[in-house]
Image (cartoon, rainbow, N blue to C red; front, side, top):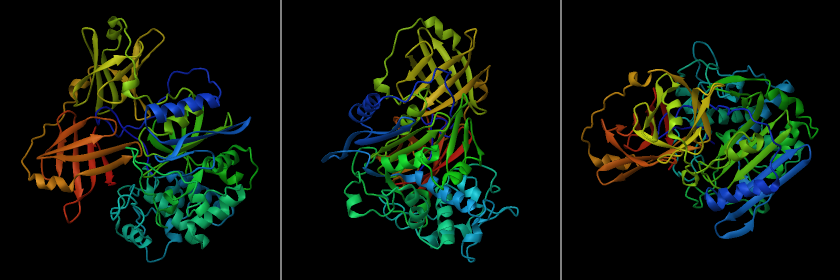
Length: 568
């Protein structure tokens, strides 16, 4: 149930721009054999899942390719009927419910959500502006990603004990920091609230509403919140990033609309088929209307529609959503112009899960994830490096400086250490200290005009500028002594996004952080709750409860503050 991220050794975690590569001819959807090869590599070589199922639909029909197993000790193969938790893909169903209710005249997009909640609930407003249903569906409500009173008793099943009353209490006490509708911020809270409001209006439980309004018309008989015994026998066991089996998540009515659904590839292909017009359905007008609403995300090339995200590059428009729970990763997307759709489901919650596979199958220009150990350095003429030397601005406060020292090329981001980058080709380079790569972009005369930083499935473009790096010296931080016993309240894992988490560990009198796919670095106290890194210009503030236990941390970097809720 999460959403997008990161750069360099912790650098610019907040820079989420999707940038296109240079245009190349568009091939068709890869063959079953090629998809199978991708899955074998992801599972047997990269060890990023135990089982993955891919569904593809195009003008030739539907096909399912699967590889792996339900569990470590369960050798049964996966297929199109294998059931997975689909996490935040649930939000697309919630927004379809909204769009269909609007079509029927039962609600309006501009209705305040307060209209569909008990009168005792004080939904926050700002400057007379109310949170509307369309604000919730487009993640522009002004509500945070998660409520501040979210403190799970069981981190392995974190949403199970969060009640509707707790949600109402949070809403009644929260003060908006910006106007509703003014800015995109992905919010599980908003998705859950929308599902709750629509279910209340319909007078039935959220799961029953989805079944009646969406699943039954589309004959999606394996898409449910509560599974029958027979369906549970087809449920792939979820695994964490270390491929250890974990509990399934149970989301009550407060968060059901944000991520409670389970489904299989065959059912989700039916859903995509209806969106692409291969299947005739009364839901077609509501499905089309979902994409008529567009709001900016602040991310280059990315808009948010009702429930869906829309990624546009070189005129190619990909409609998509992903999902992640404690043991699963999921992706659904389609291209309306080519009428191709893709579903990818995995039974492991790993950062390098399935998003890149889904995007690659829809757009061959999007590369598949490759681990640093798999990358191969090639020999090139070091004279080429001279054309790349310079400063590249990723944001107003984040510069990547490229320098040459003899036959070696280096990258140094604002406030960070200098790291060597190694050539895979004349224009493509990779780091060995972190899973990140750089592609240099040149104009028709061969002059380098920009670089693209590839990390965690994202491509972020930095334009070449002159003399910018020297002006961005980091603030000096001073280490103080604190009682190391307080570190115990901070150790644990904190989720920044579906693809990026930060793990805090203690070793004696020292505290360390380790971000997804990166090395472990010590963090040093400026106060009992404020810490800084010495290898990179980044700081961490811990937010604690009355017992001194951290409930979240805030990562400060590049002039922005990223909250990360504790997940275990």
